[in-house]
Amino acid sequence: MQQTLFEFSIYTIAHPDKLAKAAARKVATGFSERKVWKTGYDMLNKAKAANAVIPIILGDATDCSRLLYWGILTKIEIDDETTRYSVKQIQKIKGKHSPQDLLLRTGTAIAPKFIRPYAICRTPSFLL
Image (spheres, rainbow, N blue to C red):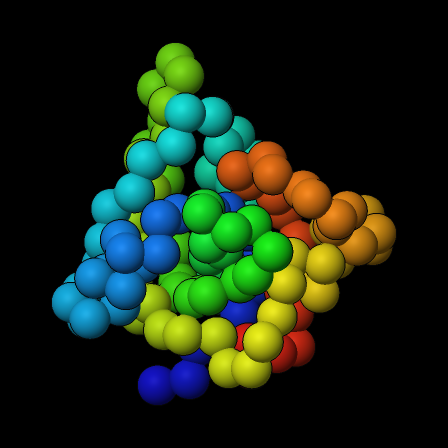
């Protein structure tokens, strides 16, 4: 069944070893981040209401100049200072892409040397 991708996606980073293991497992994998993803949480609810899924684009935390994998965001849980989220269908991104290939939801490109662990982006066409 073809899933409709939401117009916005989330970009984040993780260690490449963890990403490779998650992709090999073929089941939803949990991650955590020490930043509250309030906008991401709201966006996930909007996507579900629209019968769409939110792509999550996963960059290399050891080399923030490359995007490695992407998957479908399935859940976000937030507490005071932490976000726990789950991603399914993690797969390698085809071709070579960097965070600068992503447009923030404002329409501007991610700046070189961007190292924040979370950004809301327009869903890129290279995921299709």
